[in-house]
Length: 165
Image (cartoon, rainbow, N blue to C red; front, side, top):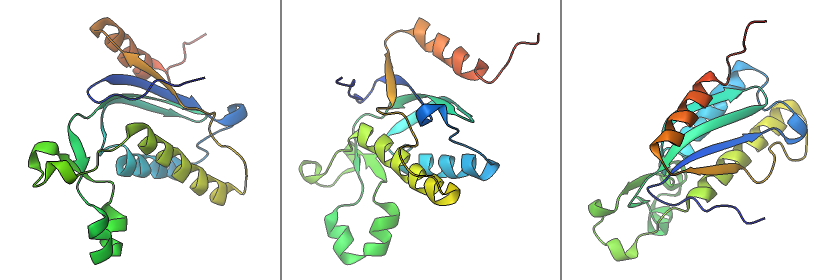
């Protein structure tokens, strides 16, 4: 099944859960680690408007940034490999580029793949488990109007609330 591409300038409801409904987060530091990786991989390519991390799933409301390019290139890798490795995901506005024809644009769905792969490696190392941690592929729904945008915000914020019986 072909997945919707993440298009610059568009809003998306992105969500996923643990493979076979397994927990993605078992301890507080798991959540913190995921958020640190999220900042590294997703913040350069998307603005986040709402999010919730639950033990076995998560929801995100993001807008894919427009006209951003990678700040660093392979030339930077050859001059300072350590700095390049630590900062290669950083983006800048296309208008700030000295040579806009020679820059590389990020591919947003790859940033999400990097996030999920990095967290999976961490979680597998920490927990001793193997195999896919997340269901594949991650789900993404484009948000095409203001009404649906409001619905998604409410859904995400109310997701952890359980009604009293």
